[in-house]
Image (cartoon, rainbow, N blue to C red; front, side, top):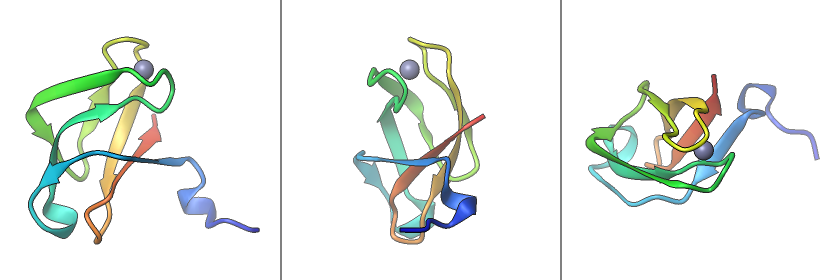
Length: 74
Ligand SMILES: [Zn+2]
């Protein structure tokens, strides 16, 4: 099944957040590359750039209108 090329690199991450829709912020994320859990005390929100402390992979954060966390590898 064809996928939206713009979304091709996005990994949807199962994470708990606070707030509604794309304004939701998350306190941690599971790295799609190495599966390590990375806590972020300052929170993770749409448009942020984050770093996995374990494998060093950088991600750009996308929060969908449904409040789902997606990460794109930088
Ligand atoms: Zn990682």
